[in-house]
Amino acid sequence: MAGYLKNAQDYLEVARSLNAGRTLQVFTMAYEGYFAIVQAVLEYHEVRTKDAGRNLAIQRVSQDLKLSPGEFAAVSKAHERRNNTSYVSPFPPVSKAEAAAMVAILAKYLPQAKALTGLSTA
Image 1 (tube, rainbow, N blue to C red):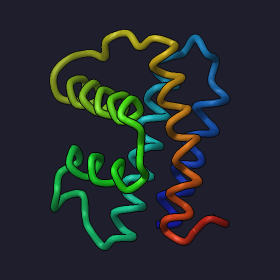
Image 2 (image 1 turned 180 degrees about the horizontal axis):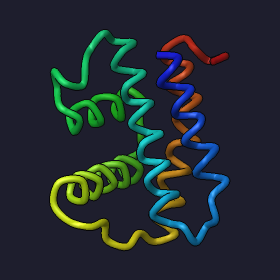
Image 3 (image 1 turned 90 degrees about the vertical axis):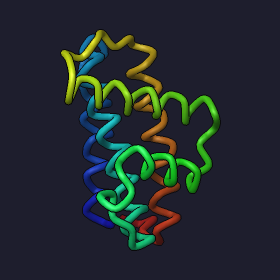
Image 4 (image 1 turned 60 degrees about the vertical axis):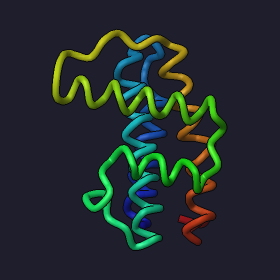
């Protein structure tokens, strides 16, 4: 768990350090950071992503962390975009607002994931 949460923290720091004009890179770092949180919480519950699938894992952990409906919609959209570009086509343009939303979600829920897993000092 600690390794996943450390990775999430690193993704957040990189996302924040990137030029705001690099919206795709900021968005990607923030999405991957959020998924590292998902992995940490799943490990805490002794569940593997492979068993449930990435989409279901994101849904489950987002519920555990109590994301708002708007935040969950942003994460779901990010996941869909990631899948479509990983498996189907080039990544469509990402707006500054979309990138900023994913960074905000990662920043907000990283401390909550640390608290949930008992690694709040990690």
